[in-house]
Length: 237
Image 1: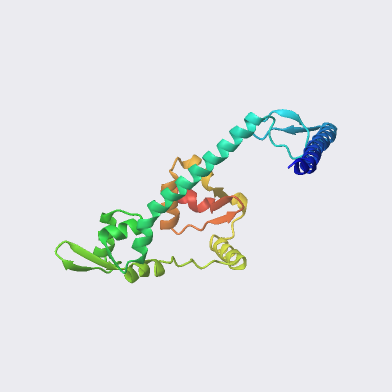
Image 2: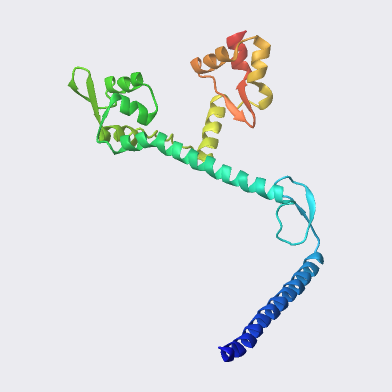
C-alpha cells in the first residue's frame, strides 16, 4: 500500500499541475486575442445611417446596420411583424378568391354565380338572358342555369370591330375634295367655328346640326375647322 501511494501521489500532483498550467495558458491566449481584436476593431470608424431610426452614427464595421442594440431589436420586431401581416393578408386574399376559383371550375352556373364571375348585378344577368345575348335554361320555376361555355362565348364574340383607319394620303384627298366642293375658297373667305358662334350668337350644337343638315363643306387646318363665309352668311343672315 505504501508503494502504491508513493507512485500515485506524484502522478496526481503532475496531472493537477498540467491542468492548471493549461488553463493559465488558455486564459493568457484568450486575453491576447481579445486585445488584438479590440485594437483591430477600434482602428475602423465608418459613418453610417441607422436603418431603423435614420440617425447617423460611427460604426466599427462596414456592415453595421443599426446604431444601437435597441434599434436592432426594434427593427427585428418590426420585420417579424411585417412578415406576420403579409402572411395574414395572403391568407385573407386566398380565402376571398377561393369561391371565385371554385366558380371558374364549375360547368353549370346559377344567375348568382354568373353575377359574381363577371362582377355585375343579377338584374344585368337577367337582361343578358332576356335579350338573347346569354343562353340559359330554366330547369325549375325559379332555377335558371347557364353553361360556362355559353358565358365564355359572350366575351369571345364581343370584340369591338375596329373602325377602318384612313391613311394620311386618303385623308388629304378627302380634304381637298371637300374644299373643292366648297368652291375652293381662300382661308380669308372662311369663318372658324368660334367666329361663327360669336358673330351669329348660335350654339355649337345648333351650328353643327346646320352644317350637317345643309351639307356645308368643312375643312380642318391645324387646330381650326373652317366653313365658307358666303354660305354661312346666306343661311344665317
